[in-house]
Length: 311
Image 1 (cartoon, rainbow, N blue to C red):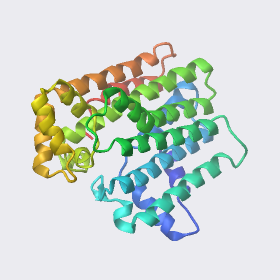
Image 2 (image 1 turned 90 degrees about the horizontal axis):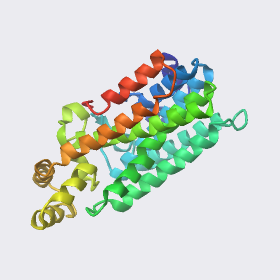
Image 3 (image 1 turned 135 degrees about the horizontal axis):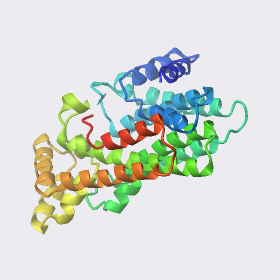
């Protein structure tokens, strides 16, 4: 992973200093580097980590980071991981353009020697992530979002990229079609478990742990699985009262706390945790027919740990 980190830093150089400043600020905010790790582990599970794997791990992280910059603009977020967002520090205009520039840089790098087997996959994944973000904007403030719609949304926004991270690492290491399918399925299910857990943490964790206030998603009008389930099982009076709070133009801290209490009282936490566990188990099962290796063990342990994480 040290090589991946070095590759990320090498790709941050730009002829316009503000580009390097904005992206270095965002990259240095202390992310988990989860997607590059999935890329490297998937390659290791197939064979060896070569230069292509290292470069792809860095490019996957840059794609992810651009989506964070753009998400923060859409959400008007002021902090991420306890630090000011790029848009809070440099404004929306600069942040949008820097994000666009880095997207272009990634795909310029991917195609500099002609199209590779993974170029189309990453291009398709990036477009599907944009579809997911647009869906989230469309459903913002609408408490009638169904569980099926929510699961489709998080697949597009999150799980498609974790699946692609596993697949491109495997491709670069020479995976067979069967191995590629197994690791792609692992990444997709892992990403679903990861995002559901992330949405759970927004309801249950303190700002010191996740770097943002509890209930932040609610305040941004995002409907997540714990809330969806609680609304589905609540009586009409409770549901109508909570929906009335949620659809106000600005959700107060006290209203957010009341909605969180409603979610907990109606089993939203336990239900969502079980759904996340089901996806985590499906991720592990995807690897059942692959040959044992230390890298494969690490992938399985990641799936076991994803639902129990605290940040």
